[in-house]
Image 1 (spheres, rainbow, N blue to C red):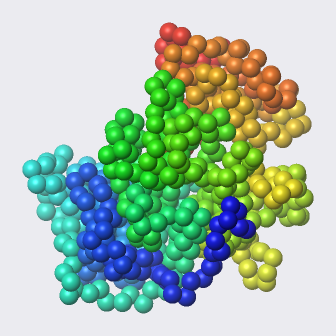
Image 2: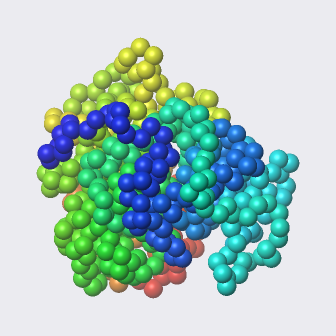
Image 3: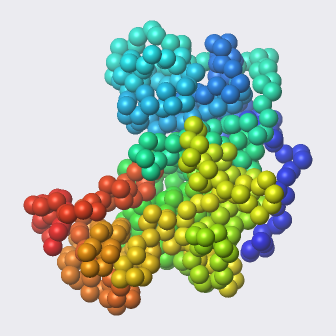
Length: 552
């Protein structure tokens, strides 16, 4: 595939990095003192970043880390997370980045599930890790950073564990670990259908390849400045630091998008050129823009993944970012990125998720494993070097996702996502296998209904799911968030849908909310929305109603 004049991509670069930490080693030599990481309390060049990482590696090896040992990273400081991640790799370990708001019960589970050898953390998070580790029979070694000079932690300092490692000096080399490119580099935990998080096992080869492929089609370059306000426990946020090490661009960290005005100030102050986001972030920006016009001409690349970017948001985003190329992307943690749509095709294919990323292939199969012709929905399968090795200690779930491919002995990823292909080979996401709703004998993609809802003036966010129904088999239930100051009843929303959708796709129920529940990564958390009887006595918080559900 060569969309929009994209230069050819070499699947294997014989002169390129083989291991993920090689990216940082090479960057320190090529880009030296160029700014690499910008956090609230630190600005690091590439040499400083590499020295900080080598210091972590030396300390881990001194304390007994062995090749393949797992190390958990739980830090609020993002530059420290970036240093620890590469330090673990330099030492030959496997890195696992956790969200700083991870509750103690989940941290305890992850310590046991990974059999972690060490925890890299901070004194300010003592309440979390202290409570998590206290009942464990097998405790990981703890490296903890104290608060900055003049700061204070929420708990007394304490002396258990080891101080955060100092940067390595120029003469302090890390002995080679003997790591191969098929060895594990990272475990990234995602939500599991059983309610237990599951660790996606990613090799050095997979992560290096994915970083190269994505940086290639985005055309990232030295001098770019990426704003990263996504959690580093989320692979979308984590990969931004790989792009920096690969291309020589800088990453400017924001802890979240909770205070949009501050993020917009950072965009201008730090001369940001690349802005990765998710639909909820862009929905907030569009809503702000409609109240008071925003204009950020310095951004040249806008990227979206995690969920579909509604076509209705494209024009407002072009007004906000008049010089930006907007990249719609689709993927899943199990292979990082699957497809991308060239920005030049946005107007012609506004609902498409594009084609396979460079160096990979995708194809569709029906539930019996037969190829799907254009127009017929099928389950997306992915081939390429970027696939996970499996789920950590989850044999059955691994076998359900990694299935035999076209070539003898080959494994491909069966994503479980329903997708349609048009005559030109462009793909359209329909929903997860467990998300497709069958109502009145027809298969309905909740995403298609959500896009229709979002096209209604005054609707800011929408989520649609299927609920049991004696007559229909399943009925469509929609949850809607209105723009600030808008007044619209559920009945009015249903009537608007009747002009946009086929009758069987119109939601049977519409409920108004103040906001949709979100995951820590900014995705709508549909599992938190009720599929059974709606709670009584609660209303939607619009038009003077108390906050809660609206069951009219």
